[in-house]
Image 1 (cartoon, rainbow, N blue to C red):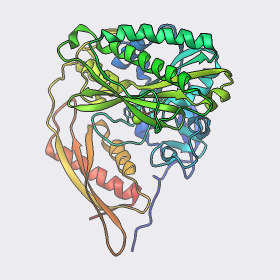
Image 2 (image 1 turned 135 degrees about the vertical axis):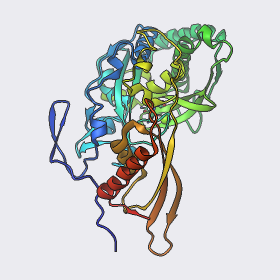
Image 3 (image 1 turned 90 degrees about the vertical axis):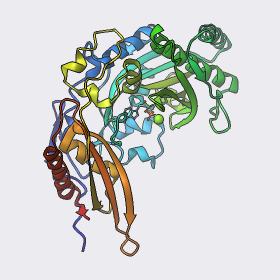
Image 4 (image 1 turned 180 degrees about the vertical axis):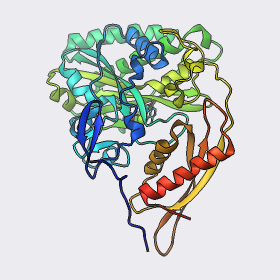
Amino acid sequence: FRRPFLSAPPSPSSLSVLGQSILTDDYTNVTPAILSKLPIRLWEKHGHPLCTLRSLVESHFSDFASLSAPSPLVTPAQNFDVLSFPPDHPGRARSDSYYLNRSLMLRTHASTHQVESFAKEHDRWLLTADVYRRDEIDASHYPVFHQMEGGRVFGTDTTSLKILEEENRALEEVLERSPIHIVDAPHYSPTNPVQAGHSADAAALVSRSLKLSLNGLMLKLFGGASNKDEPLQVRWIEAEFPFTSPSFEVEVFFRGKWLEILGSGVVLQSTLDRANVPGKIGWAFGLGLERIAMILFSIPDIRLFWTSDERFHSQFSPNAISTFVPYSKYPAASRDISFWLGAGTHDNDVYDVVRDVVGDVAEDVVVLDRFTHPKTGRRSATFRITYRSMERSLVGSEVSAMQGRVRDTLIGRLGVEMR
Ligand code: FA5
Ligand code: MG
């Protein structure tokens, strides 16, 4: 006997989102916790570290056009198809992205706006956007975060490429004297290829320009006197995106771990064709603003960006970099829960239930153990939920009550069966 599996919470037939009424369907998986974040617009709040970081980046790239963020409600075609994502790309799955219905979703990255931004005929631009992903729960992942996308195009004629070569050399000179320790990756390689239609020389020039521009940004952000004793360690890594080639990610060493702060690459020519900018070659990057702000301001936990606690906000003032001094860390409490999963249940469904029921008190959720029954094929798992308030001490009975509500919601919404 199996319980009927409920793939979605019993939902109203329409949702009100940013003043729009939207019909739901069998694809709908946005949760109230997520929808409540849409109107907040942290990157516009003066004095908020994300707003300060955005201004710092904008002033570093002062000759870039600053484009304002369009609505986060986009079509899957905008989020994926125009960027040449293959039809079976995992990012499209309901387990990875938030859908309002089959034809409308929350953008999963700021790259969604590449085509329209390049189409505006700026040869260099920046765009900050809130983005949404179904993801794990820990100190550096949050289902709503912010990305700053940057793009730049160059003429492909000899004169333009010569000017770029000179610009690259000038940037290199500045960086040679920098206190940042940078490990480079090849500008392209057999596994990180130059696009058909690009010459290897032009692609290498553009990759180099991309890296120098971003290394220059990191020097500006992290090269300050306060970091002299501990030079920042940065590494460039070959990466893969459906909309760039060659592609790169950057990781920075932070609190004993390599933290990924951005993705980037040479823009796919089909993107520039769709944007109707012929005869150009270009690069683009997407900065993870929370990740960079965590390093810059020493913010230990990504949930803090969303707190209303004055002990957080009083430590920051507009356009200034300061080191966050954590206020007392309250004790954490962990509880385990084991259950049989429904056939289509994904770990991300469990994480969304936890976020919905207990909100930011969930500090971390890990899978301790998985089991598949040898005869029936049913899957079970044990999740360990760590609860910690950033504002006060939780008492044991409260934690148990939260765990009870998580359990009831897992049963009611996902149809799981306790073990
Ligand atoms: C992208 O989103 C690409 N659009 C980046 C890009 C732009 C590539 C332009 C090429 C050209 P990625 O999924 O790696 O790539 O995310 C970019 C950054 O967002 C990550 O490096 C990380 O810093 C941040 N990020 C990703 N997931 C989360 C999360 N759940 N919470 C906080 N930050 C995140
Ligand atoms: Mg990545």
